[in-house]
Image (cartoon, rainbow, N blue to C red; front, side, top):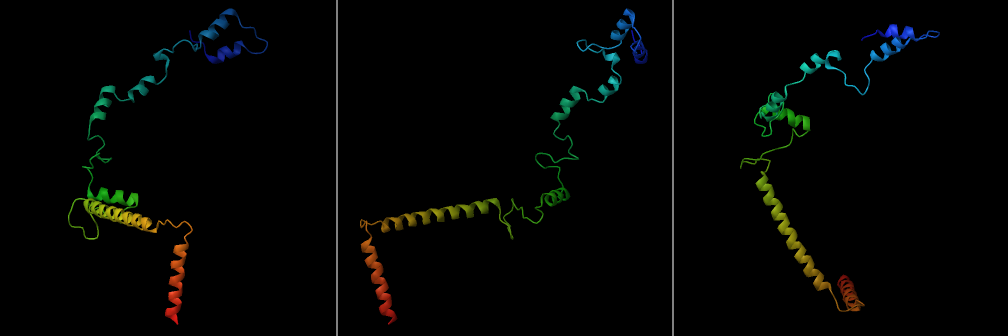
Length: 166
């Protein structure tokens, strides 16, 4: 039973007394929240559902490695042109940076292998310096806790410097 809202509102105006049938018609005109709304009563549902993709087609799309390859970069960047790469570099603010990774011709750039070699050389130099610092620390260790022997040496050097200036 479908009673228009205007009719229901007229039954409940001030001074009006709705009948039992009008009360029943009022409640039957609406869907109770505990009851599901029938699909045929949802306006535009068919059109809404038609705008969704079929679940099988969607799963196939997810598995397609070439999906959106005309718009997005593939994981292996196999679909990028030099223009795409330049655009990405400009957008990322790295257009003026060198990115040579695969050639022995370095020019003003270095390959990752060469850079790793430089880093290894610096690490080795750092280890050597650490060993020399350790040796110096051992030499500076003294049994003379008051450091009076060291002070005597310093005083001697100062006196020798004064004598040489004269």
